[in-house]
Amino acid sequence: MLLSPRDGVVDRFGLAALFLFTAGAKLWILREFVGKVGELLASMKFNYERWQWPATVAVIAIEIVAAILLLLPRTVRWGAAVAGLLLIAFSAFALYYTYGLHGEALECGCFGNIIGSQLGVKTALRNLGLLIPALIVLFGWRVKSPRVGEGSLVETGPPSRSGF
Image 1 (tube, rainbow, N blue to C red):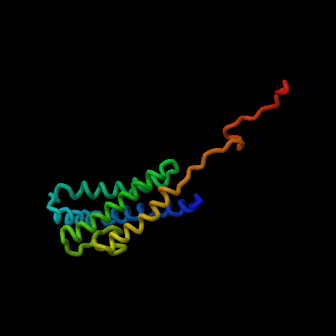
Image 2 (cartoon, helix red, strand yellow):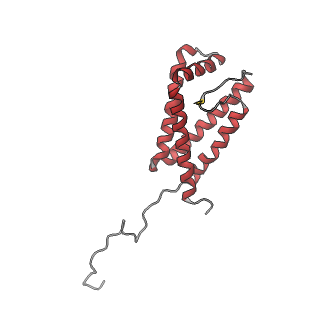
Image 3 (cartoon, helix red, strand yellow):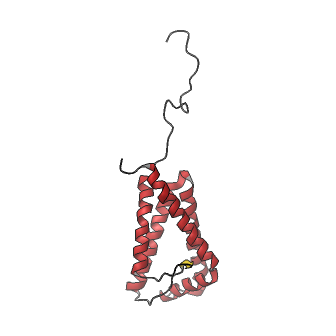
């Protein structure tokens, strides 16, 4: 077997911790993060006054949902898929902002004020690097199913007197 179930556990909890950390960091500097989202929306010619709060809430909510899905054993693969799609979307937006819009260096606030990070190639590469653990969890996670003979599926009773 290429991956053992334990390999995905570290990646699973690491990704969940990362998304909870980033959501918490954004909530810690909420007004400042809303302003940064507004700047990004304005650079794309969106009505930033209308969309900055909904976009901010959506980003933080999706990060929290991804973390919760990764923490619940029955939804680990869904959590890995959401995490992977979120990381791809963040990377695509960073590259679009840098090369498509020719945007100036802008602090994205991805990790609040704890870790400085500007939108650009480094942000995209970091997010694509974080995609590796998401893929390990997505394709390497195994749900343990009860086996016959462990007593969970087969009931054993007293032996039959008929001999059969």
